[in-house]
Every structure is written in C-alpha cells, then in structure tokens.
Amino acid sequence: MVAKETTKPISREEVKKAKKSKKEQENHEESRQKVSVRVRLLPIWARVLLVLILMVVSTIAGLIVGYGVIGSGEPKDAIEKTTWQHIIDLVEKE
Image 1 (tube, rainbow, N blue to C red):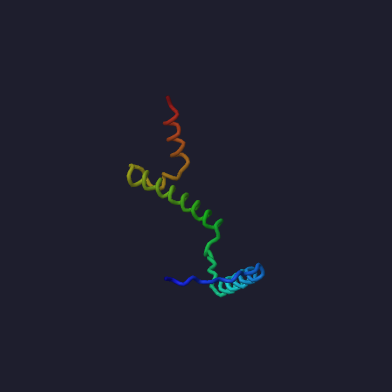
Image 2 (image 1 turned 90 degrees about the vertical axis):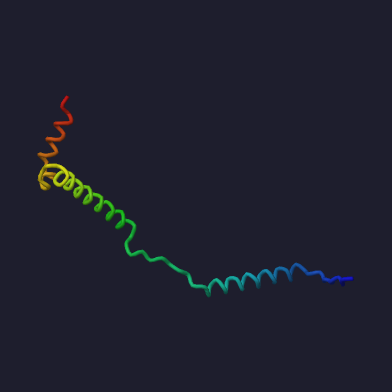
C-alpha cells in the first residue's frame, strides 16, 4: 500500500506571505532581464516624406522613359507643360 501524505492546514497569513515573496522574486527577475528598446534611424514622418518624394521621382522617371524611350518623342519634352496641354486637348476632343 502507498502511504498517504499528511498535510497540515495553512493559515491565510502564510498563503499571503508566500504569494508576496513569490511576486517579489518575479519582479526581481524581471528587473535583471535586459529590456530591448528599438531606436529608429529615421522617424516615421521622415519615412513618409521619403516615400512621397520617391514616388514623385519615380513618376517623373516613368514619364521620361515612356515618352522618350518607348515613344517617339524627346525625353525632355515629357516634363514640359505644352506636351501635356496637347495630350489633354486630344483627350477632350469629341
């Protein structure tokens, strides 16, 4: 037969002390652990601004390549106002 373990009753104060000491040990262990903080090289507002600038530059580069290299025009004509006015006039004619 297996012998039964006898347990003595624990008072509330002993339970509270045990919980308190356990919490103190956990807090002490957490304070020893390194806390990693992420340092951003560029702030978020600078990232958004950079993305917008890159979008404008890539759009202009795409216009130049599309109009000058793929099309039959001069690459510098792709960014002139008269070219776009001519294109708008062609689209709006009925």
